[in-house]
Amino acid sequence: MVTDYVLVPEAPGLDDYLRLRRLVGLSPKNSAQGGGALSGSWAFCHIKVRGTDEVVGMGRVIGDGGWYFLVADMAVLPAHQRQGLGRRVIEHLIERVMIAVPDAYLTLMADSPGRRLYESVGFVDALPESLGMVLAR
Image (cartoon, rainbow, N blue to C red; front, side):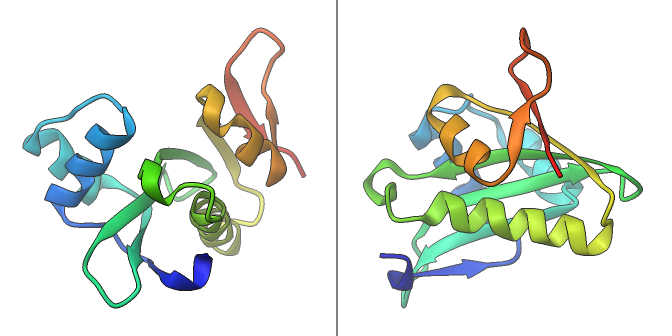
């Protein structure tokens, strides 16, 4: 249940970032790459199990701060999926972008397992032959 978790509106630590990527099946990254991702993101958030330091989910936005933003590194550990955590992360990130830049162009690349979630919060296929998606308004 979502109440058993807490959303932290900042980047997780480097070890947690690299661990989450690895455990959810995203391409593994080294410490230098992870450090760049953590420091170079426009917005980041992560999910912890309430009352612990256990990081079980995350997401981030890369952006120019002017109009273009990309959602990346959406991840929830398998044992914590189906609890609404991915929705909580993506909705938080969308809200952060839209408050800062109401007419932002927000994109993402969706793997099959995440497509339903992204569509449910307003993302649509960018082109019929593309896996890219844009936020419809």
